[in-house]
Image (cartoon, rainbow, N blue to C red; front, side):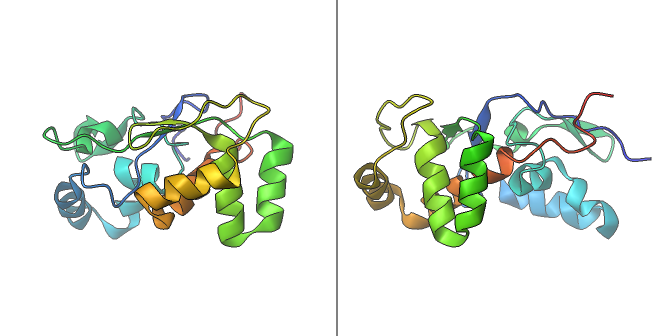
Amino acid sequence: MTAPPQHSATATIQVIVQTDNAWNLDRFVAEVNEMPESAAGDHPLALYFSGKTRYDLDAPGRVGETTCTPRDYLLPSTTPALWTLRRLRIGEASRCRDIGGRQAQLEAFALAVTSSTAVEVPPQGITRRLSDREVESIADQVGARVVWEVGEAAMRASEAPTSAEKKP
């Protein structure tokens, strides 16, 4: 029997991209190499990067006999570029999936990003998306790959609840 998810499906979506220098990836890789191959995907940071925790930085997981969270893999001497997102509504998520590819990631980014520690994000509400010009300006500052990765995270975090996440 599969264990129930340990994350909150309604937690604030907080994305730190995998290439951010704030992650202690050496620790992560060392721990994954010590795990049985079949369990490597269940590492708390692997689950976070895959979106299975809905980008909940405080989702607990087991590494051997220790319980830890993705937040525990942030280097104490660094400040990550943290992107806070809102969940896409079903119509928005559907349109993004229908578009597909990089364009879908750009659209999801424009719809979902509410704040960032990396750049100033213009205020937006549930009915406003970032303009193409605003997205372009952010991409110029942080790089297109970061924008695409955050957009992909927005789509993953906004997927329909899995059967394990639904209430019994």
